[in-house]
Length: 99
Image 1: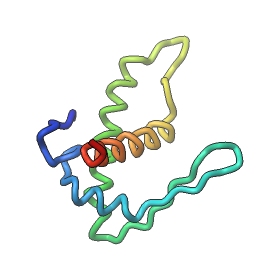
Image 2: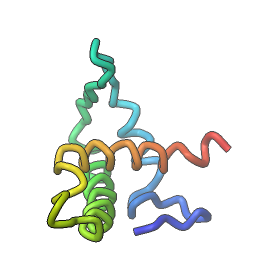
Image 3: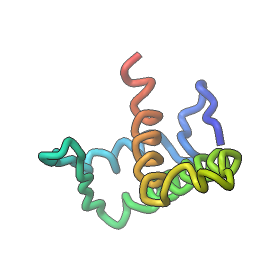
């Protein structure tokens, strides 16, 4: 589900709804250089955000399916794919705000 750059929909959801959801998300950096993402989204904010992450994750899964080989198996774990989907969604939501 590639987003139309002239649309205010990101992964099928309104940008404003996703921005509101992101305002409840924070990160913590760990000593090993990794991050923990924390989010306590109110019930009225969570559904559009969850749907959008699932749609982006589905895009990544389809792409990953093309990369599966006997030698290498899947290119990333489900947990890695979910984290990548979160980051991709956050970048898409904020992209037009920075330009």
